[in-house]
Amino acid sequence: MLKTYQSFVMTACVLTVAPCAMADDAATAAALVGTWEGKWAFADMSGKLVVKIASASGDTLKGESTWYGTAVGDFQDTFTKAKVKGREVKFPEPTMDFEATISEDGLTMTGTWTSPVASGKVTLTRKP
Image 1 (tube, rainbow, N blue to C red):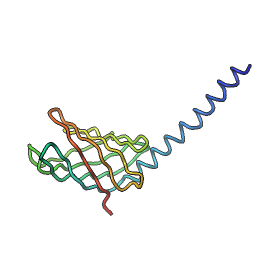
Image 2: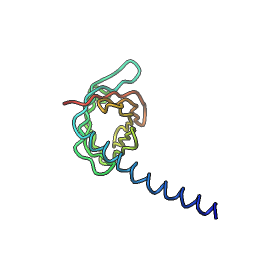
Image 3: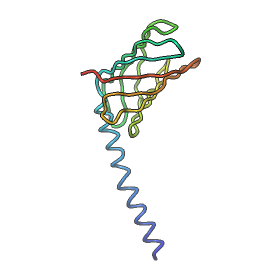
Image 4: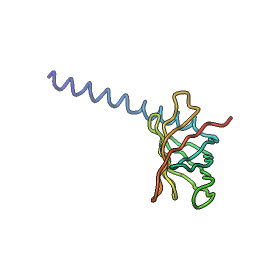
């Protein structure tokens, strides 16, 4: 009987917490909508990076990024499946993926970008 009760309590706790976590991710995603500017870096090279998050639906973000001064010149990428989980956000893009950790105050993101041939650091600051 005690074992059944413990299982019931554990299940109830998990079912109660899971929607809260998803709601928090959705709130975080909604708060990220806007323009973010910063830079990408690789070895001794770096350039400007502008990320425009156009919309949030649940924990999913849509928008575009513009990468300046790369080895292939300036280019734009779009993202439609960026995901927020806690303070982490992952942006899968056609050319370069990147992932970042959102600061506690929600004003900056730092992380890494990856392409098929290289990877490096990325920093972004929310623009008013």
